[in-house]
Length: 429
Image 1 (cartoon, rainbow, N blue to C red):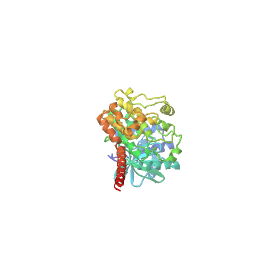
Image 2: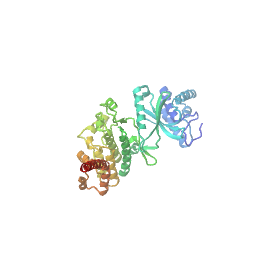
Image 3: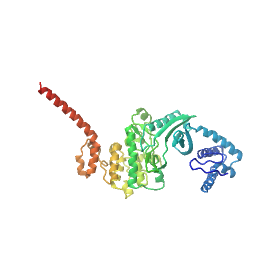
Image 4: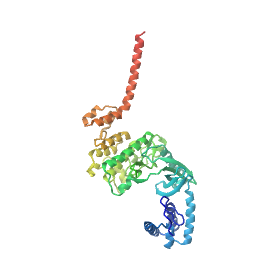
């Protein structure tokens, strides 16, 4: 029997099953051996055809009509699903539907009833909730997320535990990821890619200021919102750089995603810092503008070996996509330098060069030797005037070093005033 369609709530069958519970229904049917995967898929396909005709019918009803299930089996399944659904009830939140599943948890779409807003709720998988170490790691992710509050980061709202389920609530962001676009075989235009990467770099700057590294920058963790915004998501691997105990517990472990992981993460170094995130962001930018990952291979180990191997080099992105500027190529190569001493030292340096590219100017810092970067940081701009820097670039450099310069001048002024005061006191005696 068809039911009335609703514009906002998720679709429900004649027994009141939400789309979230239909997923649980599928699992129960397969676990009990009541139907085969092919039978379930055939019924789901029929359900989709009915929906296209504005006929809303639940999966359970369709399976009974198709004689895949008996009426009595459907009654028992409904009871089981109803009991399971109660376990997902979180006080103050109305679960609407399932958004996806990650390595550690299920993400649900919900309504925060107190303020009537849509949020995303991440729940630790039942299998992992039996392990204290996974619970600790999950809670740590929620606390780390709470340290960040930035327009380019998916912000945390709440966290807790109910009926044995550990959860934390996040800002709900509507949109697709960079990966979604790349999966369509679409390549980003240079300016569009730079604008997105600049936003992520701003998010990394915010995290860096709070002593955090993300450790898993990749296309699927960057959300492109429907209103043109950019949000960095998934802090499941994020770590406090000052937490030496945490770092030592992971010594020797390659933590990250093979296609975008930095060499120091592959080696399992304990002193990983923000430059690892810059490397991964560079690999992401490379993929965005070329349509392919920097290093490929048949196995994860082969890909990670290429990130580390000093004799294996990426093909410059502007050689693959000839529409790209050479400046972008140099910036990506600097971001992805195998020796992190040759990368951008921090997000501020990267942001400076990204802004140059967006203004159709040459990057100021990319390709410079480490000692040149140190010289620039000390305020020696004169040496760069003969390298083609424009007046606007020099103004940008000046702003970059002004903070340190002002401090030095202030200290010098205090010292000079002290000397003058002493001289006056001596001469008046």
